[in-house]
Image 1 (spheres, helix red, strand yellow):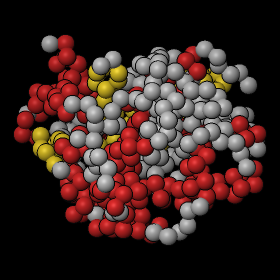
Image 2 (cartoon, helix red, strand yellow):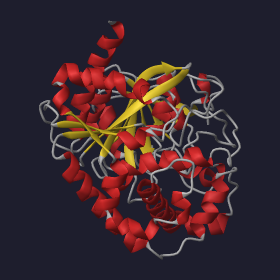
Image 3 (spheres, rainbow, N blue to C red):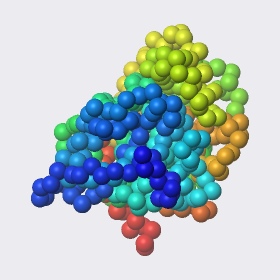
Image 4 (cartoon, rainbow, N blue to C red):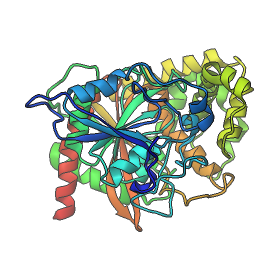
Length: 427
């Protein structure tokens, strides 16, 4: 195996999967990398852990999503480093090293699709594939100052991808350019294409922005000004999302605990949503990998080992309620947004944490992050993280969420909106 020592530590191994050679293919001349969770024929899919790689055979086929990109003219140049078992949003891997954040070298790159985000952010490839269960595309996209797209749940095949938790698993992707982001989506999102549609509303989740340490206007103003210019101010609305979710997702009461109301600042209903998501994630992770972990007793790094242990202890209690929460949130957000409404939230609650920050120090940050990430995660809606440049020398982003199945609408919207954001900055 060729292990990359340079290249920002993004790659596990490099190889070339040549594209289909034909004229006028949409991804001609573009290069991409894939997270080490995708099967490639003839290679072991290592899932970020050497014990997993050691105990699994080489793949006998290539994931259909990878084949679709090759068929559209793109060239795959290798597999990227990821957090072990896809069980972290930090981006640190004790076995293979931590890919270097190209925007902020003293900060984590975000995970678990760390290498894929770094490869795009460092301009080593044009785009890359990751997976997003709890936030593993959206978080590293935000931390590395690039676009990251989590599609509607079920909109892209997860065949040939090692499962983490099937209720939330999605194949996502990264790009520096919104047109490339949209082109890639046009190939791999299994939904009919639509012409660009005027959004019916942009709902700013005001309480969600209070979870962020970045001043409200710094994050929202570039997008608000672009929206006003493109669509007029009448499409902008405000919502206290936590109250809306509490009222319209009654099954969440099972997850509302004292713990979710005592933090410095939180949104109790979204904390409860995060609790439901993480419980179901632990339960499904155990069903997927518990037997292997018990048999092999793999070596996991700090943070990962504790999470895996929690998962192995998980029972079926309250799991049916988690499925009810998923259905109720989907229906509630569908009613709020309609066919072509957009929800505006922070991607994460602040800039990327410093490398090797103590896990206890990260706990409030993680709790707030999952409150935000669980909105699209639990509803199954699509979400895009949009880079907004730098603030205090650290990358800044914002996210837009649209209804399940509105992926192409959201991709078209990002192209228009980002062009307008750049115009505002240049003015």
